[in-house]
Amino acid sequence: MDARFPSVPNMPPLLAHYLSTALVRTFDLDRLPGLFDFLAIDELNNTGQFSQMEIGTDEDEHSIEMHLPYIRKIFEGCVVLHCPHSYVSHGFLLRQEISVVPILVGAIDKKKEETFGRILAPYLASKDTFFVISTDFCHWGTRFSYSFYFSQSPSGPTTPIRLSRSSTSPHDLSTFPIHESISALDHEAMEHLTLPPSTAHQAHVLFADYLARTKNTICGRHPIGVLLGALAVLQEEHAKSPHLQWVKYEQSSRCLTIKDSSVSYASAYVTF
Image (cartoon, rainbow, N blue to C red):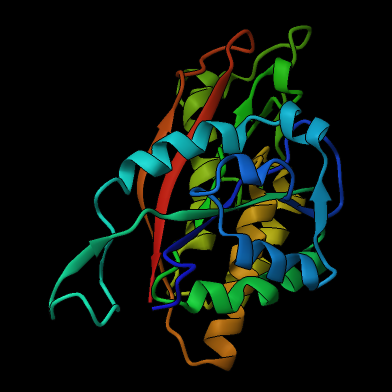
């Protein structure tokens, strides 16, 4: 097994800055020598496609800072390798900590999602690499500048209504409350992203069209796009069969009026 693995690329969205690229953290890595995958970070930087994260950008963001303790704890004591050294008796097992590749994904377009996905595809194909793609789903409410209400499924013919404090609420709110509209909105995205029945390429097209149509405030839409770009490469060029399945969906609160707000959360996993 390659000495740099097991590796965990952690790919959350860039939240506090608007940048049309993906960033790799390169500063202060020597302060935590056992945590980061230096070889993989150097390989990504050598592609010329990734920008280097400035310390101010990293300090303004909170995604990776929040994820690392959980990732480390989940993998604690779980990674077991056969020790390759000849002086160790046959069958001896060696525990090895994971190493992380921190990548922040900015506001990139679909073409760039495919570019970064192609670069990361070989790592995703590796059996000893585990990707963590981070996102919330709909951020609903006036404080998020997103208050669209769909009186039926957002994929249907109905034009969404932008609710506001000054406008009269539609009658449908009594039978189809806001939180159900949000759920239908999010679940359409989840349906587009489920693999199969769609291929990864088809899912990427459907998801991009969905975002353009609904403007849903999915903060990790670009990391998801990068994942789909990588999966499409593996499916089309390496005969991989990716499966993406959803396991959990929640909302932080059940919105009933325009005065309410909520953030949605969804969890999925990918296997081959």
